[in-house]
Length: 173
Image 1 (cartoon, helix red, strand yellow):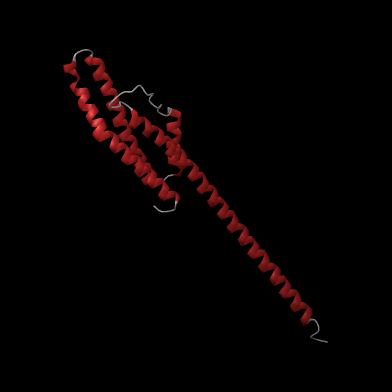
Image 2 (cartoon, helix red, strand yellow):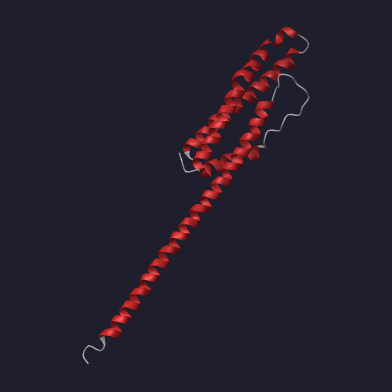
């Protein structure tokens, strides 16, 4: 009679231990699921941001590769993205990108500025030239640099930017 209580108490203790273990496991599983869901949301936001940045870069690159063609066939020049679109792309990079990606973007953007300045210089040279064929030499020099140096450099840097963003999305730095 002295040991009759041991069985029911042992069953109760084992039952409580099982319930506690189930609670702890469930709690850990829930927390892990929350962390994974948060991580997936962040990765999705980063992917959407990078795609938007790449779209802007490609649109600007299209403009940069089309401005001041060797032979003007009257095709309309693609518009450069608005200041608001460009600002949004930069903000997305600041929010999601690594320092390396931001540096690549900035380097690429400087190459685009070289093209913008060359376009302006050529335009000014052509306006100043008027009907005097001799005064167009500087514009031709800038145009050659645009074709031989600035455009290939911009294209290469834009490719590097795209590769960097792809590596970051794949989890490789």
